[in-house]
Image 1 (cartoon, rainbow, N blue to C red):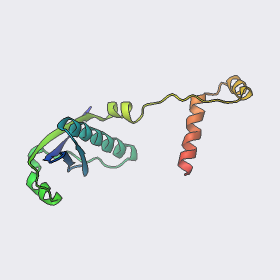
Image 2: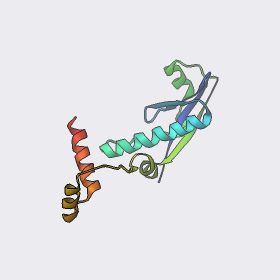
Image 3: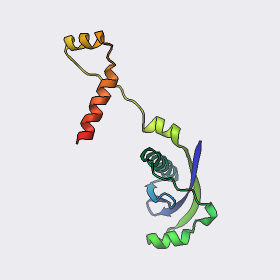
Image 4: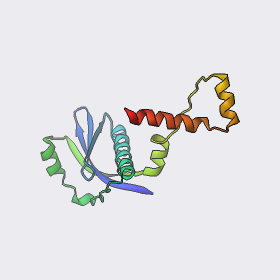
Length: 139
């Protein structure tokens, strides 16, 4: 399911700044393509983590409700060009690809431990993940 939020794009000397007023996000890119990619990444990340944390997800404003002049004044910027554009992302698909992606790790353990664990049908990946999570949370 697509999530769509308006974002303000400001052309500046060295690229584009992007502000998403509904989600209190800011990012930038050297090119328009990079700025849009960063806006998508920020949108997906914010919505994903709001949902993960059980926090309320704000409703998107209508594009015509965004006041570029007021936002420019608040940010104290005088852009060469400014416009509002909808940024959309399938948060679940984006999270699966970027936030929840698994990586393969190679490790070495003693042969006796490998034999004992195999005899007990222990899932090596699950045990390693649980141990790493416990270690990370303890910090």
